Amino acid sequence: MSPDRHHPDDTAVAAEVRAAREEYAEEEAEAAEAEAAQNAAALDVPLSMRITRNLDTQIRQRADAERISPSALVRRLLHDALASEQHQPLTVEQVEEIARRVVRESA
Image (tube, rainbow, N blue to C red):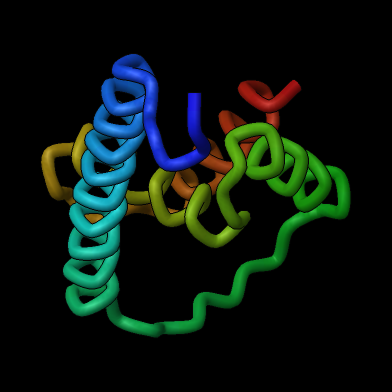
């Protein structure tokens, strides 16, 4: 067989690879759009809290395990807590309980 001639299976494999690449590119584009929309909706508001070194370590470990930033983890936990409390303001005690729950769940 000459080098210019392709085996029929080569053409099919090339088409499958091309289709897989196109599908991957579409998924990446959708993910990028979703991330851009989320970033556009987010406010960059620093939040300062006093936590123990142990809690900090546990938050970082859980975030690493979930492959997200500690900030994203805390943001999600706060969002979930607010949603579950039917949009009532959090008390100091509730925030402390959230922190304790993070510690328990990450242990």
